Image 1 (cartoon, rainbow, N blue to C red):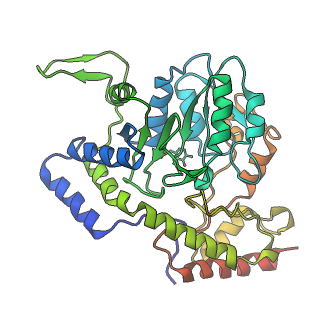
Image 2: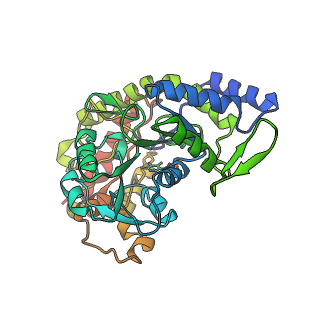
Image 3: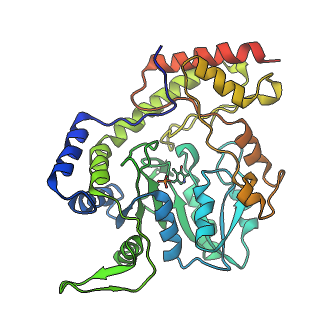
Length: 374
Ligand SMILES: *Cc1c(COP(=O)(O)O)cnc(C)c1O
């Protein structure tokens, strides 16, 4: 029986051939393919300035620099995300302030956001967990009222929508990841959608040592930049992926629908919000009924592996990780994020999956869970 991973990128032969061409061309680092990808992304995001980066994490760190966030500033983010969402705040010397999640959306609870704002708050980093966007209308109302910048961690929400608008075509800074597991990939990489060409030029300098080159061959360095440029090899993968985004996301939605149809409700799994308007279905994540199961999550994952099914965990609550506990955060601070972080499992969902694969996962859920339910 073939092993079904929880995700797998779909790279077609045309893309593989085009990457081969880049490797043969003699220009394999940042060059014409990076420029072409940025132009294609800018078109995708309604003509806004877009710059590529070798990871979304790097793009967010530069985004915070562009906003002037540093020592003494507070940045608000969700307690339930990939740890990068909070780590970038620490990297620029600022203080992460967490907000608990809404149990329905599993995203930052906007009712609790305002209470977390202090005179030191500079920015908000909302996260669209599993590709379900935070309500942008309400988010920007709150940010606007308090004069705060927004760095959207839209790492997972490429092609998703909020209020009928495509993520990245509006708003402040928007960070997208092209990591191998995301809805489209460059293997590693990402991009930042910016507000002005001037901001984009500063982003370019931060991306590569802070350097500006002049036509006469001289150069200057006016900010302390990083080394975070995307390669043409990676950019060519992205150029092969972008035209398939809508088809990929449509297939993900079909598979998610099938999960909702086929998962036996009597197993007691906590299903995600069935949103087929806004989400890009980056992941399908039920919550395990742990209190009524004679099995740990680790044992569940092992048992599913025994049935040839890959299961992931995305993610534990950030404030309970050692680095953040050292800052004084503890169990009980954000109960909703903690509960989801404890119980969440990521089931297989990727565009190349067949309908029968969903049925296979559902059969394995039945075989693994039914005997241990009490
Ligand atoms: C993947 C991801 C990131 C980081 O993206 P990289 O390209 O791997 O740096 C950040 N935040 C969230 C929510 C993610 O899922």
